[in-house]
Image (tube, rainbow, N blue to C red; front, side, top):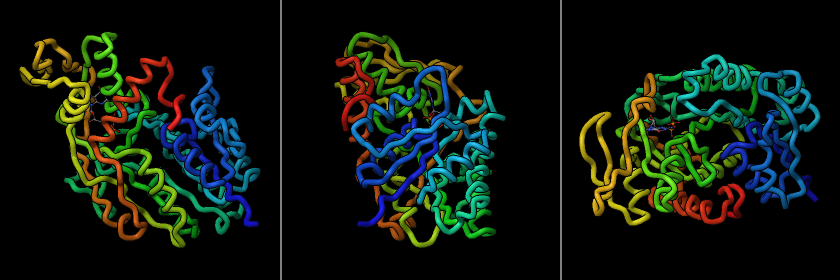
Length: 352
Ligand code: GDP
């Protein structure tokens, strides 16, 4: 019998971490996850979704604690490390830039250096969660050959980690791959991200529990895919003989405005827009009720206005392409938030 593969996931409590854990457990991996202690139980999400699996182990650690990270890598001796832990919210990173650097950049360096210190260079493959935000203001479409022009502390920290991973690969021969993922969403996306904020509000407005959805930059364009598709791409990167860097994206662009229109359309509401800039409002075409307004507080000090990825390399080398369409993504998210309101359970508590 071949031995069960062992994976270590940092950031296992997040959207991607919890979906990846489920994916790997389904593939009969033994999965270890690093969890930061908090006064609220952040492990609920992962325990609830993966509770029926026996091969899941959670360990308290912190990306700013190099010793503990090294010890856990030593103790768990993973075949694959997925480094997903990060301060992931772009707007929050403007408030806490040093924390973004510490967790996203230095934390990655601790993982890479631990592998070297433990002489595990030839024993472990590493996935580094890089981000399309690193492209920042570079004209679209962006791919692996595009230059970088990060626009936020988050993106600058991620870019540092990206280069650190490449340096460890080139200098020390580590099998480390950067996944440059464009925005990827799901019903378990954090509520601070614009997609989930919209779908949650649409469900609440339909149920009569919320009046208006407040948004910032409606013109911002993103390449939104479904996280489930991207998890498979992440895994495929580590199944390759040689490490490399890959963009994962759908190649389709939609604005925040379009996402909002699509989400309301799913509950049978056609939005019409009136006014301009911060005075713009979105109304129900039938009733005239104001459902969307613009809040200047939700604009970022510097925003990335247009991200659209070209994932041709991933398609060619990994055989990866996204399967779930934009419309299906929006519908699934709105339906999950409707169901959450009906059942009183969060989407991560539900199956599927
Ligand atoms: P990001 O691409 O990782 O920053 O993902 P987000 O979902 O946080 O933001 C995507 C885009 O939506 C950004 O350009 C935001 O400026 C824009 N946006 C507009 N209104 C909002 C809002 O209310 N919340 C968030 N998070 N983003 C908003």
